[in-house]
Image 1: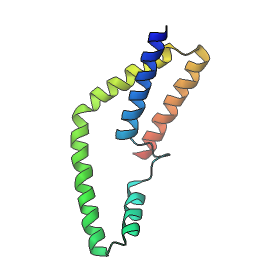
Image 2 (image 1 turned 60 degrees about the horizontal axis):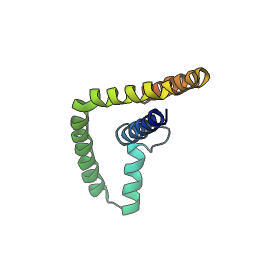
Image 3 (image 1 turned 90 degrees about the vertical axis):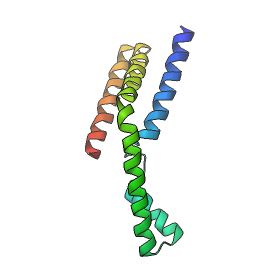
Image 4 (image 1 turned 180 degrees about the horizontal axis):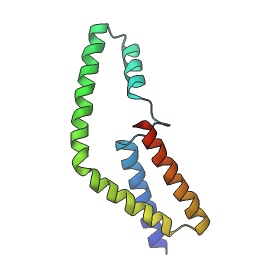
Length: 113
């Protein structure tokens, strides 16, 4: 039982880390625009510099997307497996709460789109 609990914990940790790195939660992450505004303000960028930095960041985000798209099915599979393993160690009441948490998270992701 300890092995399964440790494996589930490791799965959760990996899933959370991947989720936080690749799919920022809009409720806990600053928006791209807010990040860019703060960056420009903190560096006191001129309008010309701001335009150049925005262009660089746009290119970066497009490039990152092309890297993530091919591995998205693998990430989804890893997340699904972790969710299944977490659910297996929960009581029926905890499973209901966990499932609601999943639905809420999915709804927040849809609102972002």
